[in-house]
Length: 218
Image 1: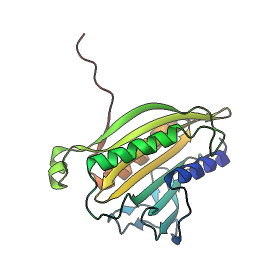
Image 2: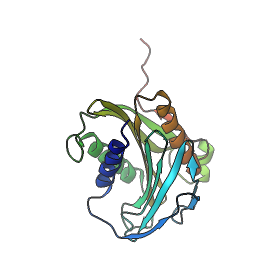
Image 3: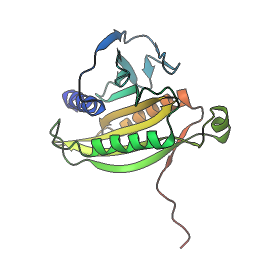
Image 4: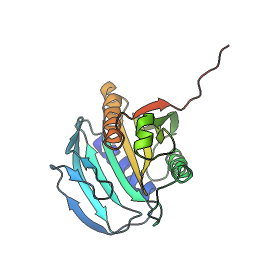
């Protein structure tokens, strides 16, 4: 595992997030929890085996807040909270779904652009489902609260997994990006624990359900 490679991947993910530099407001300590004033969510200093390395806030709402984590094996896990527009109204299903598809496509076509990586394969997609009771209490229109996509790729001979999760919280988008080695068996579980923990900070009892249609009776 080469930590520098994952650092390059984190940089390329940041490029995909927004192409221009945004003005940094403040970088917060890594060893304390972070309370996000946009969503009211508190992010722990540790999530699973990931430790918070930085929190960066920007004046521009389109860049928003970036909360970065890393683990001892060189994996990166980032949480982005940002606006798609300046309208304070809740994002519609059409808006956040369209944004998810755009981000997914950008990642899938990253090959050979920002970093010298090989072909990127989409392995599986999932729906972030919440109980019907939560749908009513959160005044949502569907039990599908967000979406997740798992990718596989290599840099040279080093194989990696990468995860994307996107869901709306009011007028904001929350995007999760985790990249880890495929050579370390436990890393896939570590990544999933991180994703589940963060999602359940927003949606109690949320779970990922395969988006692939079930086969009908033969």
